[in-house]
Image (cartoon, one colour):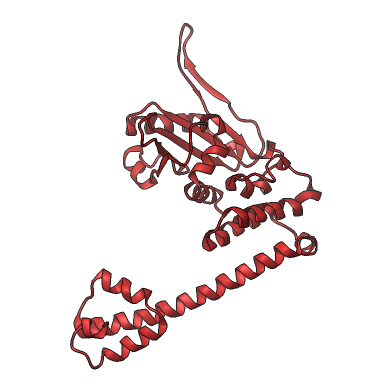
Length: 292
């Protein structure tokens, strides 16, 4: 299980909410007008080299009206606090600052587990301090889940299972996280994706899952109906893409390689249209006549 990848997805899918939750002290000016640009790891490695462990995707925030200079958020998720290296994070942030020619970099470390860690780094000699480095720390296990149970920040709601709670509250934590997902995320694919996120970090036992079904029957029914619908839609899409591939294959066998626009048109067509087109391939003399 890659916790690093889970949190990378979360930050990229919900950049504004992630910034507001994980880096609250630096996100007061972040609103819907801000343009968010995820910085690709592949791009960074060309300059930073392979000596770094891959960190979570940095986010570049720009204010289109020019009222503030761009701000670069450097997120790192750390599952095992003992493996956290403040030197590595400082080095990473300095390289980001050089690469983007900015000194507006906000280092943010997200900790899934409690543990001892360096809060700051100071480099100097007997007379002078030459470098001081600090970072924003979001220690999830130190957050009381009840403070976030009704939050309209989807990143906070999805992370309820990672917060502090009594084991007897686990089912309620799970239920409130899923309720937040349904209330705050309209996209069916993202709902399914982050239902898995909640499942992974809640890690209910079989007995707790049965308790959830008893105590939250409406939520259970909603999620089961949703999952069933998504599976059926997924099967239908798979069948349709298979039929589309047949049409593409027949066209290319008769007329040669087809362009991207024609391929996209075929992939979006309904099953009846695809069937009609596949029959025309045998009788028509051009792609336009087949797809008319």
